[in-house]
Image (tube, rainbow, N blue to C red; front, side, top):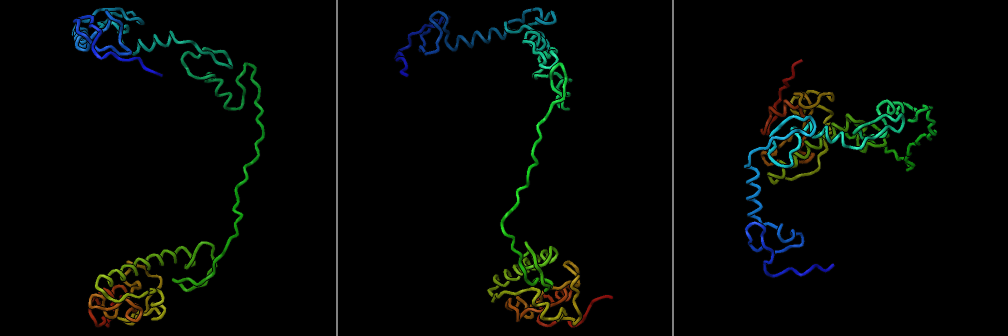
Length: 274
Protein backbone atom coordinates (compact mmCIF):
# COMPACT_ATOMS: atom_id res chain seq x y z
CA UNK A 1 0.00 0.00 0.00
CA UNK A 2 1.47 3.33 -1.09
CA UNK A 3 1.60 6.05 1.56
CA UNK A 4 0.78 9.67 0.63
CA UNK A 5 3.74 11.93 0.08
CA UNK A 6 4.59 13.97 3.17
CA UNK A 7 5.16 17.73 2.70
CA UNK A 8 8.74 18.85 2.94
CA UNK A 9 7.90 22.09 4.76
CA UNK A 10 5.68 22.75 7.84
CA UNK A 11 2.23 23.65 6.56
CA UNK A 12 -0.10 23.12 9.59
CA UNK A 13 -0.54 26.15 11.90
CA UNK A 14 -1.01 25.69 15.66
CA UNK A 15 -4.51 26.64 16.85
CA UNK A 16 -3.07 28.49 19.90
CA UNK A 17 0.22 30.15 18.99
CA UNK A 18 0.06 29.96 15.18
CA UNK A 19 3.43 28.23 14.87
CA UNK A 20 3.77 26.13 11.72
CA UNK A 21 3.95 22.36 12.33
CA UNK A 22 4.63 19.28 10.28
CA UNK A 23 1.46 17.59 9.09
CA UNK A 24 1.20 13.85 9.81
CA UNK A 25 -1.16 11.07 8.86
CA UNK A 26 -2.82 11.21 12.30
CA UNK A 27 -2.82 15.00 12.74
CA UNK A 28 -5.99 16.83 13.74
CA UNK A 29 -7.60 19.13 11.19
CA UNK A 30 -6.53 22.74 10.89
CA UNK A 31 -7.93 24.87 13.73
CA UNK A 32 -7.81 21.98 16.28
CA UNK A 33 -4.19 20.84 16.03
CA UNK A 34 -1.85 22.18 18.72
CA UNK A 35 1.92 22.08 18.97
CA UNK A 36 3.63 20.17 21.76
CA UNK A 37 4.54 23.18 23.96
CA UNK A 38 0.92 24.40 23.83
CA UNK A 39 -0.42 20.95 24.74
CA UNK A 40 1.95 20.71 27.70
CA UNK A 41 1.04 24.21 28.87
CA UNK A 42 -2.65 23.27 28.75
CA UNK A 43 -2.00 20.12 30.79
CA UNK A 44 -0.08 22.00 33.46
CA UNK A 45 -2.86 24.60 33.69
CA UNK A 46 -5.47 21.88 34.18
CA UNK A 47 -3.35 20.21 36.88
CA UNK A 48 -2.85 23.52 38.72
CA UNK A 49 -6.50 24.53 38.41
CA UNK A 50 -8.60 24.51 41.53
CA UNK A 51 -10.69 21.36 42.04
CA UNK A 52 -14.34 21.57 41.05
CA UNK A 53 -17.01 20.26 43.44
CA UNK A 54 -19.19 17.58 41.89
CA UNK A 55 -21.69 14.95 42.93
CA UNK A 56 -20.56 11.32 42.79
CA UNK A 57 -22.29 9.41 40.00
CA UNK A 58 -22.98 6.45 42.31
CA UNK A 59 -23.50 7.52 45.90
CA UNK A 60 -24.26 11.25 45.31
CA UNK A 61 -21.57 12.42 47.71
CA UNK A 62 -19.95 15.80 46.97
CA UNK A 63 -16.23 15.50 46.18
CA UNK A 64 -13.47 17.68 44.70
CA UNK A 65 -12.78 16.70 41.06
CA UNK A 66 -9.41 17.78 39.70
CA UNK A 67 -10.14 16.87 36.05
CA UNK A 68 -13.19 16.61 33.85
CA UNK A 69 -12.93 12.82 33.74
CA UNK A 70 -13.51 12.41 37.49
CA UNK A 71 -17.12 11.33 37.95
CA UNK A 72 -16.90 9.18 41.10
CA UNK A 73 -15.55 9.91 44.54
CA UNK A 74 -13.70 6.61 44.95
CA UNK A 75 -12.75 3.44 43.07
CA UNK A 76 -15.41 1.44 44.91
CA UNK A 77 -18.16 3.71 43.55
CA UNK A 78 -16.68 3.41 40.07
CA UNK A 79 -16.70 -0.40 40.28
CA UNK A 80 -20.25 -0.56 41.64
CA UNK A 81 -21.49 1.71 38.86
CA UNK A 82 -19.76 -0.45 36.25
CA UNK A 83 -21.42 -3.55 37.72
CA UNK A 84 -24.87 -2.00 37.51
CA UNK A 85 -24.43 -0.96 33.89
CA UNK A 86 -22.90 -4.31 32.87
CA UNK A 87 -25.24 -6.78 31.09
CA UNK A 88 -26.83 -9.26 33.50
CA UNK A 89 -26.03 -12.94 33.00
CA UNK A 90 -28.37 -15.76 34.03
CA UNK A 91 -27.69 -19.33 35.12
CA UNK A 92 -28.32 -21.91 32.39
CA UNK A 93 -29.69 -24.42 34.90
CA UNK A 94 -32.02 -22.48 37.20
CA UNK A 95 -32.21 -19.06 35.52
CA UNK A 96 -30.85 -17.23 38.56
CA UNK A 97 -29.34 -13.79 37.94
CA UNK A 98 -25.55 -14.12 38.17
CA UNK A 99 -24.68 -10.43 37.92
CA UNK A 100 -21.01 -10.02 37.02
CA UNK A 101 -20.20 -13.62 37.97
CA UNK A 102 -18.37 -15.00 34.94
CA UNK A 103 -19.79 -18.49 34.73
CA UNK A 104 -22.62 -20.37 33.03
CA UNK A 105 -23.96 -21.87 36.30
CA UNK A 106 -24.58 -20.59 39.78
CA UNK A 107 -22.85 -22.10 42.82
CA UNK A 108 -25.64 -24.59 43.66
CA UNK A 109 -25.97 -25.84 40.06
CA UNK A 110 -22.21 -26.11 39.74
CA UNK A 111 -22.06 -28.31 42.87
CA UNK A 112 -24.83 -30.56 41.55
CA UNK A 113 -23.08 -30.93 38.22
CA UNK A 114 -19.82 -31.74 40.00
CA UNK A 115 -21.55 -34.56 41.92
CA UNK A 116 -23.14 -36.09 38.85
CA UNK A 117 -26.40 -34.13 38.36
CA UNK A 118 -27.35 -32.21 35.23
CA UNK A 119 -27.75 -28.43 35.25
CA UNK A 120 -31.36 -28.32 33.98
CA UNK A 121 -34.39 -27.45 36.12
CA UNK A 122 -35.49 -31.10 36.20
CA UNK A 123 -32.48 -32.58 37.89
CA UNK A 124 -31.71 -36.04 36.59
CA UNK A 125 -28.74 -38.30 37.02
CA UNK A 126 -26.10 -37.81 34.41
CA UNK A 127 -25.16 -41.02 32.69
CA UNK A 128 -21.43 -41.09 32.10
CA UNK A 129 -20.03 -43.43 29.47
CA UNK A 130 -17.86 -46.19 30.84
CA UNK A 131 -14.23 -45.58 30.15
CA UNK A 132 -11.89 -48.41 29.37
CA UNK A 133 -9.11 -48.84 31.89
CA UNK A 134 -5.79 -47.55 30.70
CA UNK A 135 -3.45 -50.40 30.00
CA UNK A 136 0.11 -49.83 31.25
CA UNK A 137 2.78 -49.70 28.61
CA UNK A 138 4.95 -52.75 29.01
CA UNK A 139 8.52 -52.92 27.90
CA UNK A 140 8.73 -55.73 25.37
CA UNK A 141 12.51 -55.55 25.06
CA UNK A 142 14.35 -58.67 26.25
CA UNK A 143 15.66 -58.44 29.79
CA UNK A 144 19.32 -59.38 30.12
CA UNK A 145 20.69 -60.50 33.48
CA UNK A 146 24.35 -60.12 34.30
CA UNK A 147 26.28 -62.71 36.26
CA UNK A 148 29.63 -62.06 37.84
CA UNK A 149 31.68 -61.78 40.98
CA UNK A 150 31.40 -58.77 43.25
CA UNK A 151 34.57 -56.68 43.39
CA UNK A 152 33.88 -55.77 47.02
CA UNK A 153 32.77 -58.95 48.82
CA UNK A 154 33.93 -61.44 46.14
CA UNK A 155 30.50 -63.07 46.11
CA UNK A 156 28.75 -64.36 42.99
CA UNK A 157 25.66 -62.48 41.85
CA UNK A 158 23.02 -62.45 39.14
CA UNK A 159 21.51 -59.00 38.64
CA UNK A 160 19.65 -56.92 36.10
CA UNK A 161 21.13 -53.52 36.96
CA UNK A 162 24.39 -54.05 38.83
CA UNK A 163 27.55 -54.44 36.75
CA UNK A 164 30.41 -55.17 39.17
CA UNK A 165 28.71 -55.28 42.58
CA UNK A 166 26.09 -57.56 44.09
CA UNK A 167 24.07 -55.06 46.16
CA UNK A 168 23.55 -51.38 46.85
CA UNK A 169 25.80 -51.54 49.92
CA UNK A 170 28.68 -52.95 47.89
CA UNK A 171 27.98 -50.38 45.21
CA UNK A 172 28.45 -47.54 47.73
CA UNK A 173 31.67 -49.13 49.01
CA UNK A 174 32.94 -49.50 45.45
CA UNK A 175 32.17 -45.83 44.75
CA UNK A 176 34.18 -44.78 47.82
CA UNK A 177 37.07 -46.99 46.74
CA UNK A 178 37.09 -45.39 43.31
CA UNK A 179 37.27 -41.92 44.85
CA UNK A 180 40.17 -42.99 47.10
CA UNK A 181 41.98 -44.55 44.15
CA UNK A 182 41.57 -41.33 42.14
CA UNK A 183 43.08 -39.40 45.07
CA UNK A 184 46.17 -41.67 45.20
CA UNK A 185 46.67 -41.47 41.44
CA UNK A 186 46.43 -37.67 41.52
CA UNK A 187 49.05 -37.42 44.31
CA UNK A 188 51.39 -39.72 42.42
CA UNK A 189 51.07 -37.76 39.17
CA UNK A 190 51.80 -34.49 41.00
CA UNK A 191 55.14 -35.98 42.16
CA UNK A 192 55.94 -37.52 38.76
CA UNK A 193 55.74 -41.06 40.21
CA UNK A 194 54.84 -44.22 38.35
CA UNK A 195 51.09 -44.95 38.34
CA UNK A 196 49.47 -48.34 37.73
CA UNK A 197 45.93 -49.62 38.31
CA UNK A 198 45.43 -50.63 41.95
CA UNK A 199 42.30 -52.52 43.00
CA UNK A 200 41.67 -51.78 46.65
CA UNK A 201 39.82 -54.98 47.58
CA UNK A 202 42.26 -57.20 45.68
CA UNK A 203 45.03 -55.83 47.89
CA UNK A 204 42.98 -56.66 50.99
CA UNK A 205 42.31 -60.20 49.75
CA UNK A 206 45.98 -60.68 48.89
CA UNK A 207 47.00 -59.72 52.46
CA UNK A 208 44.13 -61.83 53.96
CA UNK A 209 42.64 -58.72 55.61
CA UNK A 210 45.57 -58.46 58.02
CA UNK A 211 47.23 -55.14 58.83
CA UNK A 212 50.83 -55.26 57.57
CA UNK A 213 51.92 -52.65 60.14
CA UNK A 214 50.59 -54.11 63.40
CA UNK A 215 49.79 -57.71 62.37
CA UNK A 216 46.19 -57.62 63.64
CA UNK A 217 43.19 -58.62 61.47
CA UNK A 218 41.10 -55.93 59.79
CA UNK A 219 37.33 -56.06 60.23
CA UNK A 220 35.34 -55.98 57.00
CA UNK A 221 32.38 -54.39 58.80
CA UNK A 222 34.34 -51.25 59.73
CA UNK A 223 34.02 -48.33 57.32
CA UNK A 224 35.67 -44.94 57.11
CA UNK A 225 35.92 -42.78 59.26
CA UNK A 226 36.33 -45.60 61.81
CA UNK A 227 39.90 -45.77 63.18
CA UNK A 228 40.07 -49.53 62.53
CA UNK A 229 38.69 -49.48 58.98
CA UNK A 230 40.75 -50.83 56.09
CA UNK A 231 43.04 -48.50 54.14
CA UNK A 232 45.78 -48.70 51.50
CA UNK A 233 49.32 -48.01 52.77
CA UNK A 234 52.26 -47.34 50.44
CA UNK A 235 55.39 -49.22 51.57
CA UNK A 236 57.55 -46.48 50.08
CA UNK A 237 55.40 -43.36 50.61
CA UNK A 238 54.46 -41.30 47.58
CA UNK A 239 55.97 -38.28 49.36
CA UNK A 240 59.36 -40.11 49.32
CA UNK A 241 59.12 -40.94 45.62
CA UNK A 242 57.25 -44.26 45.88
CA UNK A 243 55.14 -45.52 43.00
CA UNK A 244 51.43 -46.16 43.07
CA UNK A 245 51.35 -49.82 42.01
CA UNK A 246 50.17 -53.10 43.60
CA UNK A 247 53.70 -54.15 44.60
CA UNK A 248 54.13 -50.94 46.64
CA UNK A 249 50.68 -51.17 48.34
CA UNK A 250 49.63 -53.12 51.43
CA UNK A 251 46.61 -53.39 53.72
CA UNK A 252 46.63 -51.43 56.97
CA UNK A 253 44.35 -50.06 59.64
CA UNK A 254 43.41 -46.43 59.12
CA UNK A 255 44.95 -45.44 62.50
CA UNK A 256 48.15 -47.42 61.83
CA UNK A 257 48.48 -45.81 58.42
CA UNK A 258 48.00 -42.39 60.00
CA UNK A 259 50.71 -43.03 62.64
CA UNK A 260 53.17 -44.23 60.01
CA UNK A 261 52.61 -41.06 57.97
CA UNK A 262 55.44 -40.65 55.38
CA UNK A 263 58.07 -42.77 57.21
CA UNK A 264 59.69 -45.76 55.59
CA UNK A 265 59.49 -48.01 58.69
CA UNK A 266 56.23 -49.47 60.03
CA UNK A 267 54.57 -48.80 63.34
CA UNK A 268 55.07 -52.32 64.69
CA UNK A 269 52.67 -51.82 67.59
CA UNK A 270 48.94 -52.46 67.64
CA UNK A 271 47.14 -49.63 69.34
CA UNK A 272 43.74 -51.31 69.28
CA UNK A 273 41.85 -51.18 72.54
CA UNK A 274 39.61 -54.16 73.23
